[in-house]
Length: 162
Image (cartoon, rainbow, N blue to C red):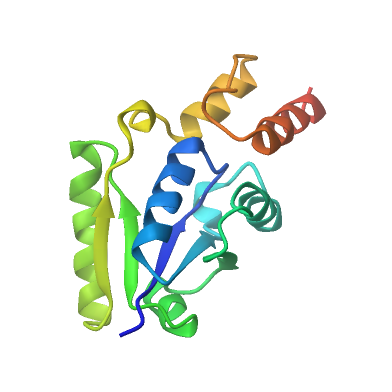
């Protein structure tokens, strides 16, 4: 059986924590599709096209990983790309309740799609896109948390807002 997974998220921006999960997921599945959600309710800093572009550049070294954007219901997107697994990350216990709700709803919407959860490596457990954006906005060093492409994009974004 071919196992294709999607790793959905806003990725605003993609962090080293996300990359850690993608690399590990890429070893588990024949194909892993990093699915960047449009998610206008979150008012992302980067456009969908910018987030997809950064993710593609950061993950280019992984031959079984694809990146695409989506703006439809997650289970519909999963079916449209042939995925039968939704991979999600859990940084802390606080993430579990929300992720459990999402997984339950997705299973209710399509019982053929399974959800799995990975925890990040310890050095990435505290990293979130929102924290990285905040540190970058205030001029802090984000080098340990993101790929150089993302660091440059954040610097350019915040310079243009001054």
